[in-house]
Amino acid sequence: MVRTAAEQREPKVTQPLERTGTRILEAQRAWAQDSESQTEKPRFPARALVALAAALVFWASAFPGIRAGLESYAPAHLALLRYLIASAGLAVYARFAHFRGPELRDLPGLAIAGSLGITFYNLALNHGEMRVTAGSASLLVSSTPIWAALLAMFSLRERLTSLGWMGVALSFAGAGMIASGEGEGIRLAPQALIILAAALAWGIYIVIQKHFLGRYSALEFTSYSVWSGTLLLLPFGGGLVHATRTAPLRGTLAVIYLGVFPAASASFAWAYALAHAPAARMASFLYVIPVLATLMAWVWLGEVPRLVSLVGGVIALGGVLIVNIWGKAGPAAVDSLAAPEA
Image (cartoon, rainbow, N blue to C red):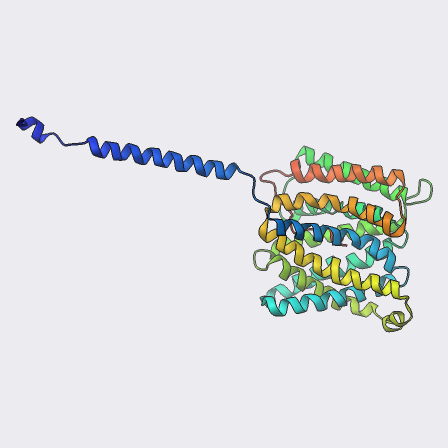
């Protein structure tokens, strides 16, 4: 069959159109697969789950562990001995992990972080737990995100919503109930207020931490804070050698446990879990620490907080949840590295 001149001049477009249509369909299928993969829940590897569980158990056990250690050691001696042990463990790890050295300009900030998050926090917490039960202490420390959110308003220009302010009010009301539950009658226990001051110091530590996490890993920042904070604890160590020689073995073992596991090993486990699981999901598990601490104190020490303290703890935790989930304007920031260390 002979083609006409018009047919010969007409470009043959059937095959290119077919190829274009095929590419469009392939692109649509790829886009659909990508959308499905993005909507799937992030995987939580088994090893990360084990590491997370270990970190939570270690941190929760620190509250009854401190109470056990205080039976044999003064608050300052307990803090120093514990963090001498933790510092040694972190130093061994840093030797093999090839930590980056801190920059000279960062040394003052790291020293301030250590003085607040390690030195003051532990001295205040230990003094507070001389009177306050381990479960109530963990509930008071759980108010830390409230302090961090308030401080971030001024230092990081973060804003709170109306729900956020309601959560702050609830948390403070719950903390007041805990403090009154640990006092006599309707009086607030001074030691409970000291623990609230420790929570405030940890909240400042969290805000400082945010400034450094762009230059250092979480474990590097934690290690530098621990080392500087331990150095600042040395002036409080007079008589520690004598106290160690005369202390019952049970009390010394409790302090060794606090240094090896809640202070050092928990940091390793938390860092591993963060590296292998979504940070937002990780942070949500931190709210079980006061529950675990209360149960451990009951089993280990036979301590049961008063009913008003438990009710106040539930109210305080509810306020913290409101602030962290609905209380911050703009994209929700996850303080995934700000675990309430004890």
